[in-house]
Length: 312
Image (cartoon, rainbow, N blue to C red):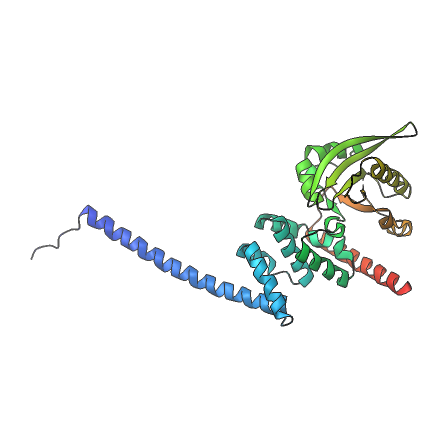
């Protein structure tokens, strides 16, 4: 009885290619099936939690628009956010600022939404501003400004001077601009202004193209003090008189402190003067600790604003 002929080298290679191709086809079929199920589940989640069975046509239009601007990887990052306004904020910012999935993940991990001034506003105002962002693409200062600012990338030790803080910011200017938010560009360091033959110096001066206004930043090592307001008001009025151009909004001031005195800030009515006071963190605390602190700040701020509305 003769032995079966052994396959030639060419036949063997052909059989191996066939096996590989069959394996690829089976794998592709399995992956496509899994993706189909995944996308269906995502669609169901969007329909029930984003649209919530109300204003379906309008909601579907939003989802349709976002689906053209964001990838499924973006949706996978967004879909597990339980708070509707939080999810809307991140989805709109992704679309407006062309965040990558990595950037979105980083901003979620540092609790960007909870750190915005907007998150501390009453829910109705928050909803209106997000709707305006979606419809017009224009950012308000409540969407841009934060509290606190996370400056852990500066690598500062426990003891440092204001000049050390300023030097560290300029060394990592690109990262600092990212933390400041959308539309910021650097203008000057220690901007010299002269009033009545006296010299004054603005620590850092920026321009925000989205807000169309100059932004002066004053760095403070300790807690906020009432006299800081007068100093910043002087800077802002000088900038408005000598640097503000036609079509620009009034200059904005940010006082960055290592601590805040909330009652003093409220009594001084700094918002009316175009001044934002915020803490900065040179080390990022555990996420749970920061989250608890921010949620408490949001609740306190909303309660104060609601009480103020009832008194007026």
